[in-house]
Length: 202
Image (cartoon, rainbow, N blue to C red; front, side, top):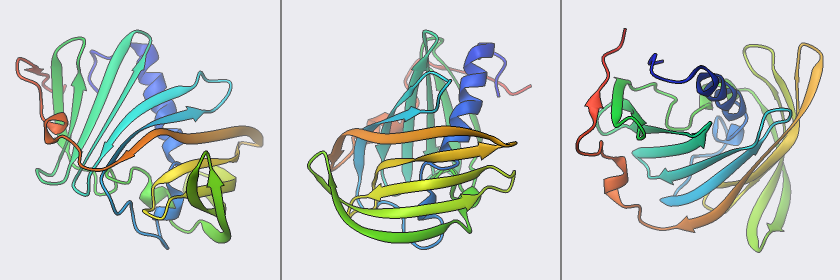
C-alpha cells in the first residue's frame, strides 16, 4: 500500500477489506456475479467503526469503487481488460498500478467459498424485488458469519446483515445498496484522469 496514504485511512481500508469478506458471499459457489451493468452506493455499518459509503460502478470486465474518509478520497479500479488494479488518489492527483488479483472483481469470492447458502424465498425491500438467502460460513482466518443476504434477479446484492465473530467477540454487520441504477456505465470512469502522477512502489 503506497506510503502516501494517511495512517488512519490505511486502517479504514483494512476495515473495508474485512467487510468485503461478507459483502458478496453467495457469488462464490452457487450463484453467478451480477448479470447487468449498474451503479449504486453501498453503505457498510460495522460498529464501533464509522459507517462507510462506497460508490460502485460495475461492468462485467471493470469495477470502480470510491470512498471518502478523513477528508481523503480513495478509488480502486479493477480492470480485467488490462489485467490490473489501479489505485487513484484524487486529492493528490496520483495513482499506482498493481497486478490484477484473480478474485478482485468479486472482491471476496475466494474467502466466501464453502459458505452454506439456503434460499429462503422472494422478498421486496424498499420496492425492489429480491430473493432472500440464509448464509452461514467461516473465512480461512476463522471469522464466522451468520445472517441473511438479499439479491435482485440480476444477482446484485441489495442487503446483507448478520453477526460476525472473531476471537469470541461478536459484531453486527449490515451492508445495503442505495441509489441503484441498472444500465450502461460511462467507460470514462474506469480511466486514469489526465494529469495524474504515477507513484512508484517502494
